Amino acid sequence: MDTTRRTILRGLAAAPLAATAGGLLVPSTAHAAPGGFALAMRLSPSEYHRNWSAAADTLRRRLQHADLVRDVLRQPKRAGGPVGDWRDGPGEGVKPTGFDYGFSWDPDTKDPHGKLDGETAQWYPQGISTSVDGYGGTVGGKKVVAVSWYGYGDYESRGARISFIDVTGDPQRPRYQHVLLVEPVQLHDSDTATFNPVIMHAGGVAWVGDFLYVANLPGRLAPFKQGGVSAFDLSRMVKVAGADKRKAFGYDYVLPLHHLYENQGGSTLRHSQLSLDRTRRNEPRSLVVSEFQEDRVGRVVRWSLGPSGYLADGRSDENWTSKPYVQGAVAVGNDAYYAANDRGTKGPDDGRGFAPRAGQLWLHKGRTGSPARSGTLAIGPEDLSYDAGRLWCLAEHPDLRRVYRIKLRR
Image (cartoon, rainbow, N blue to C red; front, side):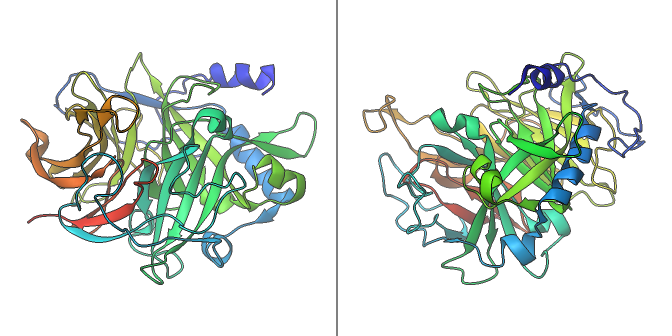
């Protein structure tokens, strides 16, 4: 990464908390509602968003436009498999409470390093959302699940990727394709653009129309450490070939960054997870950001969305606290659900001094008081997404990875 670009990204300035050209903030009456803590969290759009949008357009003129359904999901290269035995691997695992549907990652197709998606320690799945979030149901007649992964270890420099999974076909073998998340870059004094990987933890996803919002907890190698929420534009996705495909680490498609909302006003909120709430009757959709904290309860913050899919205001309109070890949170009506780790018991099984246990689902009635246990999840639970009385979740650990859906108790 060149010094000029690193300086630009680290120095992203806060835009005023008002309507901005390009629609990044829409006038709103949003306000900080009483919650578990008093501070109103603020997010502001990066001033660099105009450059990203222009660079993405330039990139699209040079490369082939890619439609999610007609191209990416027309003939996906990978296919999932059955969920198998929930008790496999080290530690104590059980079938999730209310299990309704699920699949494992491709058991046959290996990457160039001979690793399967279900076993690699170079990519870890984290966030989940669906076309129900994005469009209220299907996209192009397909129900699609989107899962985010972050590169780990020597793969951190490869950034993050999204798996788009078509779950409308064979339920035992849902087909999917990986897409790399990139920052489009306009080259100086040239009508040419290129791209670079976006280095982030990608701990949560919220699909809002053509925008795929991703929780931006910066990775160790990230050029900026502010934290926030990044939005990638599905309408500007492109197919790559030749040198561009090598730059994309062999992936066929890249999804460009469109805009970024950053922490402002001294906020220390960790954007660990992200979900969409569309359940509040007669109220706008909203982004729900939650924190992972080991030694204390995490915070959960809501930002309302305008009709066009941008933040309605840069100030949070509701804040509350959850519990420690939360890996995913979703608001459903007046309540909230949390996916949380159980630290487990000491043992040599996983090499870190702990044998992993099944995760826990917690119900936070009215989002006040203390959450109560509502069920059991797979080992290593991550993000959550709500789908008509059901929750989608996923497990992150190698050899224990699954994507699954559970029915909520009435």
